[in-house]
Every structure is written in C-alpha cells, then in structure tokens.
Image 1: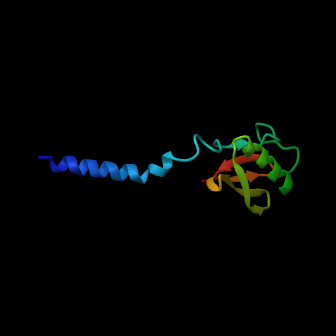
Image 2: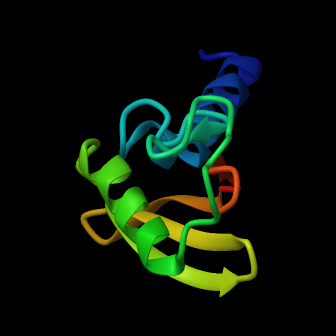
Length: 108
C-alpha cells in the first residue's frame, strides 16, 4: 500500500509545477537586459539631445526588431515613454524608455 506522505508529496509537486508552467513557455532569455541603452546614444546614457517621441519610437522599433519583437507605445509623459513589447501579439515585456539618456528599463 502507498504511504499517505508519498501521495501528498506527489500532489504538492504537481500543483507547484502547474503554477509555474507558463513561466517556462514563451520567449527564451531576457527580452530586455537590466538597464540597457538605446543604440542611438552611448553606452553610458549620453544622448546629444532629447529624442522626440517619433525618434524614440523609431529607435525602439529598430532595437526590438532585431530580436523579432514588436513595439506598442502605451504612454508618453514628459521625458519618459512606457512601451509594451510584444511577441506575436502577446506582451512579453513592459519597459520605460528615457528619451534624455536613452536608458531602457524593464518594469514587467
């Protein structure tokens, strides 16, 4: 006869694996490395001037297109832009883009 502790262990293990199942699916690797910079600015976050909203959108499209991802601008407020990064219409990351320094930060 199977021990009741073995059955409990199996049930708990299955429940834990089911909760984390969608964290294994989807995009491989980090979509946005922690604190990356726009290629139009230097590696240290020094843009020659503030990018316009259109320039920022174009820079982000170029940056994420190389990774096979789409960009959807969500909010434009002052110096920052909030952007959804999508893979086949599924949101894989949400970022904040600093138009002054060119810094890209994931908030997802």
